[in-house]
Length: 317
Image 1 (tube, rainbow, N blue to C red):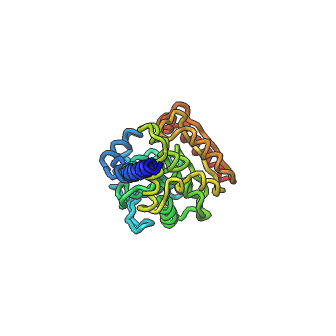
Image 2 (tube, one colour; image 1 turned 90 degrees about the vertical axis):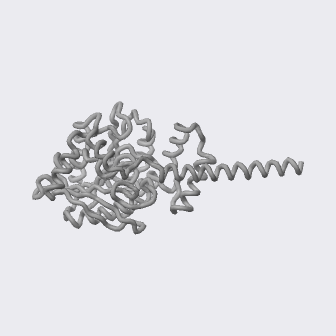
Image 3 (cartoon, helix red, strand yellow; image 1 turned 180 degrees about the vertical axis):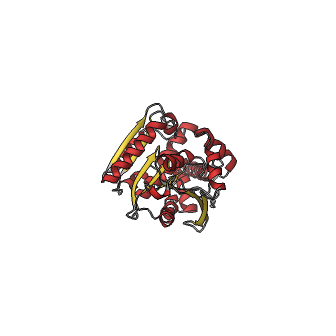
């Protein structure tokens, strides 16, 4: 019996060590070895594939000095970059939008939203690179959790530039999670609304699905170990980084968007997020047949109409 106990303890120790090593590998795989969000040329091409002519539009305004860049210090003293552009008709600007990109992308990719807000809605727009993406510094992504602190800084910067009393934060995928995560923090009065497009309910939920879908593995012990490694190395855990927990504290209007054919951030996250917001006004729009982060491309006019109408309602509140 004593021998069996020793063998059991040795097996448990080996399993724990293996889980720790695999967890360390997964933490690095997810947060560091991600798609090359700092590859500007790749993402410029992606921006044009999502809405033709986007980079020419960007370059033209940049060359004229209308679209500008700025760099500030981020939450952990890393330099962070954003671009900003005034409304098409600045004298009659309808407000300011902060557009937040997704995982492995950068400020170029969602130019279709920047163009929507500026050219269609006549909003000023600021669109940042999250840390470890684009022109911003950092040594790993925080999948929205710490990024929310940077976006909160950008909110203040944008207000200082444009002096608006109406601001909306609009994020897609990881940017949507960032938006939901910051919505639970105290915000200035001029932040009036949020739009989240296909964001995950928590980092844990998202990685658990990816682990099962890609590797056919359960959360324990790999994800558990990876979360512990993340907490020790970066200061946050996968369960702590929760959109739903933050949404429970959000009392400002939010529009939730998700494609029902999304097989990356499961469609079920939409209802979980929507239900978590129990205070204040909210709307939901499901884009039929749209895959991940593709609702605008599937239904551009409907997308614009839903966002425009939502913002119009908020302005009347």
